[in-house]
Image 1 (tube, rainbow, N blue to C red):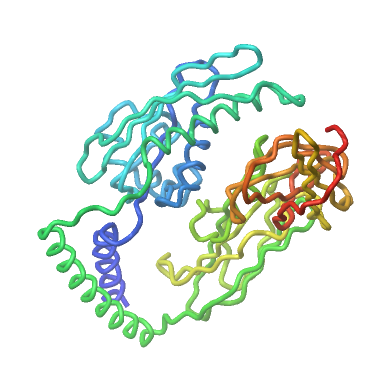
Image 2 (image 1 turned 135 degrees about the vertical axis):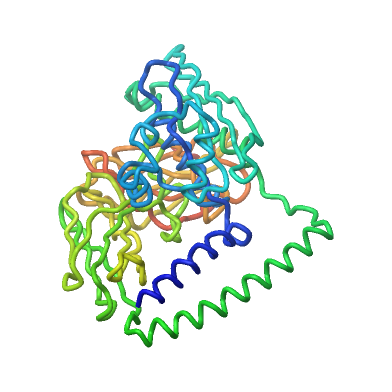
Length: 427
């Protein structure tokens, strides 16, 4: 068993060293330096991480004290808590931390300034992108993010968050940009060919190691996970992964709504495996149920259960998918219709839908693509909405319901406007 453990450790080290050649980039986002005195460091970092994750350009490494990887590095003394919760003061140390966590790039950001004029919040942010492998800066950008002003009773805090989200999207666009296929030189092709040979050898070694591991009695079976919301808690259930499991680790991904709309309604979340998960708890191999009591109204959750062996090694993992409805949120509006109404001078789009039990208001989304991203264009307490400035060409609408506590549910299926004659009522 000790020999197998040593072989597995060696193989893991080699695979982690070669994976960056074949996998997506991995970004480590440090807490932003806040020069405004408004305590915006963590909010700016979270907004940037969400915007970076939404680009699908790479993985965002969870960098919080509760993150399993970070927690282990803190326990063995490789990291201290101040390095996790505060902006880095030394670039070389930041690059070293990036190597410890397997990052390909690190982000050092700054909230430079915050201004308010006529109810509109403007946030100035800057960020630098460093290559961990090269240990040097590769890009830098400074952008301004704005809110739409404190309209419809939006608080100053919500307007600041909107400006931070706007700045985060601009920063990510400037630093990551659009993916372009590189021109491969002959030397690069030779290196890739060698890398493929190495990967083939690793795969062969993995097969041999897996067979040896199975003979040693450590085989595991595939298992399934379900997450069932119940009031202000979520029951996470899973099937057994086999007799060789020592314990299970339960991990959770949290998705929060924003004043500009729920992320799950702006861009549908189709793959939960890439979400940032954090460790919640560990239970014995006999347990197949965990109740998450630490949930918040309005949040959406997904869960991952990891089967662990006697030495704490990961044997297998499974995902629950998103819970069926955000915590405390109403159901999805039905019978959504969009009618295009044309007068002599203007065109409108009128939407109506069936009311939802428990809904205090509704949000309306619009997009030029069926799969999004969608933009929230308005809200109403009734079951009808007039788009007074519709877009030309193909356009899609969908509607979501909100509770009195602001919990937003899943939006309806997208609908396209249907022509109907007659002049509309004034909006």
